[in-house]
Length: 187
Image 1 (cartoon, rainbow, N blue to C red):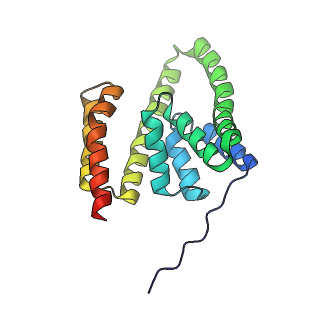
Image 2 (cartoon, one colour):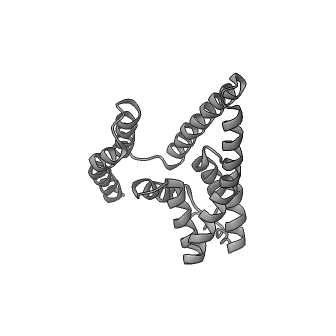
């Protein structure tokens, strides 16, 4: 007996892309990839976990901010050049205005101990969101042991030993490609 086909995934309009990425940009301030995954995969169902992980992974190895690269790729996937402009434009427009206001606030009150404490707390929460998203993606995608080992090596190299990211990517990419190729060949 075969499993029934999953229901078709919704295809966003340009307005959907604009509103969704605008929301992601505003609620994901400081941890945008965590929110983007939650919204795009869990809420909107525009992408699967695997598709999001692949998009984000490609966005990480391309020059520029990974969230921007991923938004461009998602927008392009659904609406070509127009989507590639609308998604990231909406995602960064709201936060840009908010950041300008916060910069003026920080310039005026940055030395106040309470402001310093708030900023430290927000930074800790953002770091926790990044780690939580990584754990959630790992559980859902269930990478084979070889790819999990590459990911852990990347974490150690960049996070513990402070190896610059381009060296981590260039050094571990061949092992990741080999691991992925072997995992696909085994299927």
